[in-house]
Length: 391
Image 1: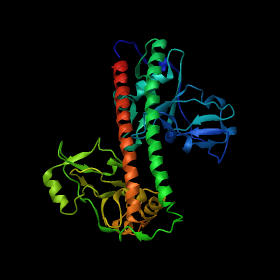
Image 2: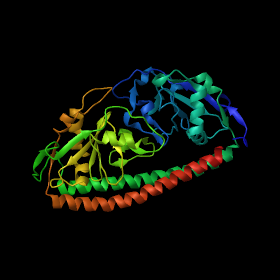
Image 3: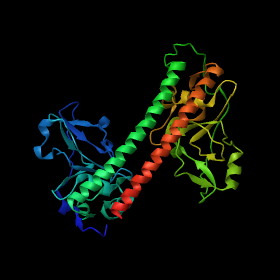
Image 4: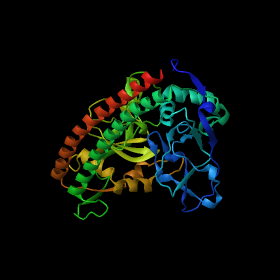
């Protein structure tokens, strides 16, 4: 950043303002953008709300190219996107948890977004511009106005943004490829077994408890984590059908053996989330030593009845997932207790058909592995470009 002059945000933006409390209505031509709508890749309007248009001053409406920054809450504060809309008849405003920054003629909105996206910038933003503690943190408007940002010539900003846009579009395309492969697995499941909710093919039903020799969760005490050792897998490391071990924690072999007396997860088992995020299954498709936390159950299913890949997809179907949510208790501390988990009903087609399905899924998973590798390479390229431009 030293190669470029730095300016304060108030010198680069002509308008900086937090939103106001809306008067919500069921439907309106004025839409209210909240934190749940704002992501780095743009606006996600599934959770947009509505404001009575007669209650809105015209100066609150967003302009194309405004930068929207989430302004409250750990994990969401600092996330931003550039607002664009092609709909002339629909107007947008923001609520009190979002700050609007309107660029002057000297700054490219996308360039600013990419600068803010950097981990180093986010860390600096949190340390210098945030008031409060835990989840009650707020982005201070006054401190934000004085936050320093790099300001190269406008044409340089535009060229940097164009290059990063291209990398981001490539990443989005590869993520879409991965999503299409996931859809292919789901459609193959429905083609071969039908919709479990309807069970038009008349498969024999059973309960998860009757289909398993053992259902056991992990240790109920917090271990002492170490820098390197045996992976200690939590619900954060299991996303529906995926491993996410990038930030996994580790325990000693001594703790692994101690906790393993209760139940050791093994290759071919199925893991099932039961605390916090409940009702997600993951087939253990690799042979490695690890321990599961209390919020994950290990399913030692009957191999003569079920194929593990089929079981993962069956449990991740809407039919089983919705049951898991019905059996989950609690609000802040959500828990799917083992007894209730055992009551979940599923259908058990003939093993040869399950095995055929598993073979197809294995081939698709091989393609997914290639796409994931391409995604990782694109992420590395994107981060390298960010480092070159902003460090």
